[in-house]
Length: 135
Image (cartoon, rainbow, N blue to C red; front, side, top):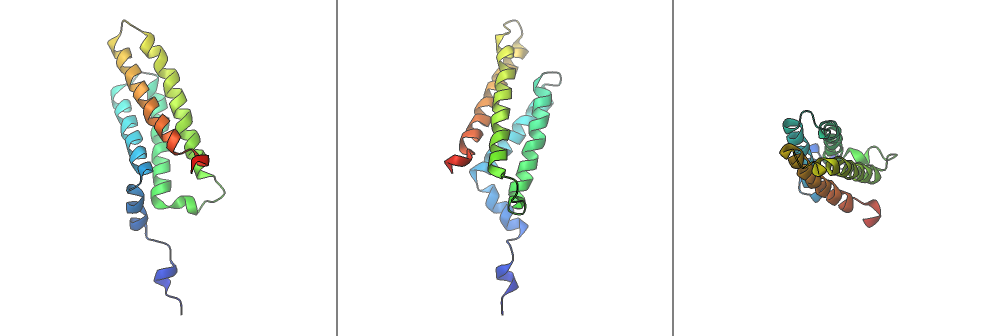
């Protein structure tokens, strides 16, 4: 007779703790925290809408990966979706931070530009490690 405990999929707690030990989990948590900080600090900047969208997408991918749901939805290429999410975020943050860095009079614009460059580095690193053909 087959033992149902052995053939069943791992529990959510096991899947969640295994995912939290990965580099991808650390990057997603860092991206989520960064987006929350940007949402709290810059209310009227162009980073606000971009950070809000990236926060929602980051939480979405965190839930998908931490619950192991990517195995239940095989018709979506999750590595490519994650790669495109981080690549587009890096490009958009770069495009938003260049004009902020070019303004010399405002110190808040300089801070926005520096945070944008930090976001480019964070999302760029995520793009490099999540490139599907690299794995």
